[in-house]
Image: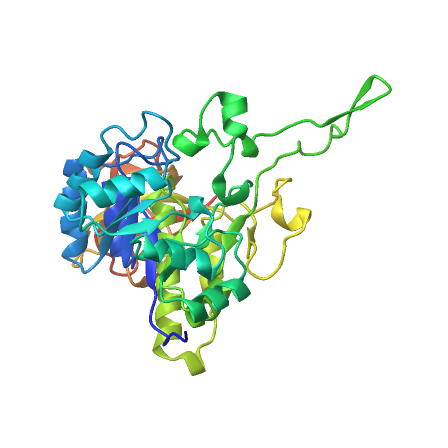
Length: 408
């Protein structure tokens, strides 16, 4: 069936309440979070029920949605308390729960009727018949497997009306749809139950046994081997995603910083708005990709969307120079008469350094730090202490929740 082009939502990660608010302020239509149980990110901040209530109130007041990831692979005993958990989410006003395990899906439908269920990418949905199957089970949306190609997404969009959600930016698991047991073996932590130790990103020496003799295949001057995958970025291909009928464009990173979340959410917000406003005259802005490189941790790629990636394209095996920026400060206040901003320090910076301000809906500007004052009004050369309050002149007006960063 042919879908009429509609504007997809920008779906951002939120590891805690602060990140939820930042993501929405910076343009996310929806956020996905984790609760205290049943998720895959035990090391993320995650949300108590009280924090969920606050997050939902904040989001709904701004016409944004909140989804909860409960996408663990449940073993015997893991489902205890699931019914109460899902009922609490429904009563709080959570917009949907993201689940992969059929047992948890059935419990949700039985114990929390009315709570929409989305299928997690962990379930490896790769074709339209799979989406139709889950539709018959009552699910409203399916998060496609990262291994699905653009051509396959187009076919799915043509043959089913099930909502499609697809990852468009962030880290990628080296295992198929995230079903990894490497962490279990290396660290005795079950990645499929929230305990991923990211063993694939560790550095390894490689040895070959030849006639009983062990030989290290990694030269001393080489970077140790890693199974770490490069990151995904589809910023150049937003038109393809929209035209294929993807309903939700998902950004990975519930454990990432507010610097990352604010930057990536705002970039994809601008790109989606620009294309959907005028598809025929849309032109990709290279500045969007430059922004994403400022928070990149690895090389960026298009994953499996356009072809099967080669080993060199998929593995981030060597340390490459990536133009990273450090999150330096957050704006607390700005005096328009004196043009002095009050900042909360997040990373060491000082007089003479070039810094950059940016904010919600504002692409930002650069300036050089000319003078700094501490909380007592004393002039200082540097802001060395975490979370310290400082003041400085700012060339252009800024607002609370603007951020300041500097090149590393």
